Length: 82
Image (cartoon, rainbow, N blue to C red; front, side, top):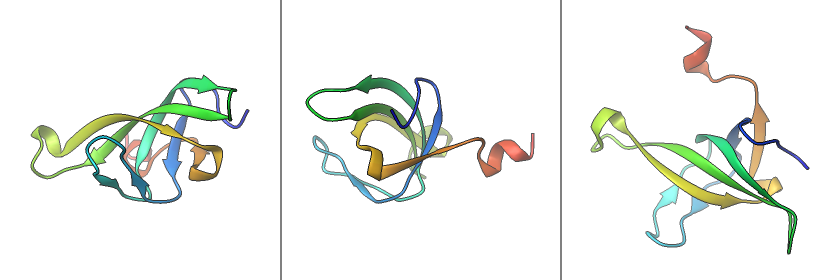
């Protein structure tokens, strides 16, 4: 198990969304919400996606990620300034 529920992650690669076909850029921050062992290790992750057209400058989406697509992080650059 690479990550635990509620841990913060950062994507290591661009992620192609399956339903909207949007490309989520590498470096996007998110939170792990689910963990799957079968048929392959995977994680449900809520991502905070930069979107200037969205209210507040961000859009949010839940995607399925595999361990090689993200890394666990302690805090973001935004949180360091709090």
